[in-house]
Figure 1 (cartoon, rainbow, N blue to C red):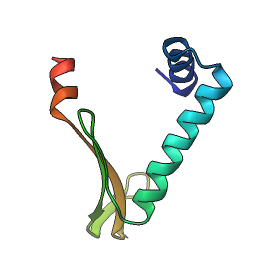
Figure 2 (cartoon, rainbow, N blue to C red):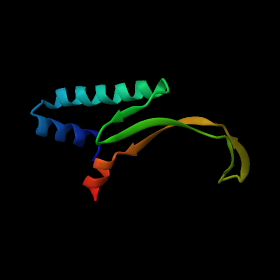
Figure 3 (cartoon, rainbow, N blue to C red):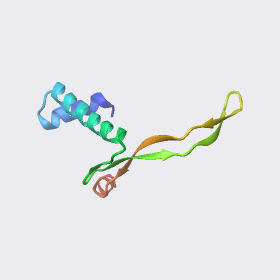
Figure 4 (cartoon, helix red, strand yellow):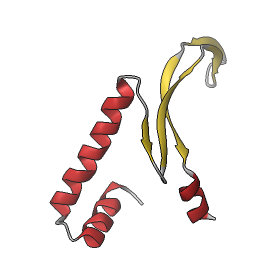
Length: 90
């Protein structure tokens, strides 16, 4: 399912128009992104949690040239599924 499919599904299930569903989804994604960029966490009970972790610097290799490079540390967003979501999948 891509973003357009998700917008259509939300519109169908909620009774919103597609444009309203798109606004809601874009706002939801924007709020989560903004909070993560500040270093915060977003927890949705029954669904899961979004959080930021830091990857340490490491050595890497460019496959085409076999040249060794240094990959710098960086922050990455992660999602941990909640128990209710895990149960609904299984």
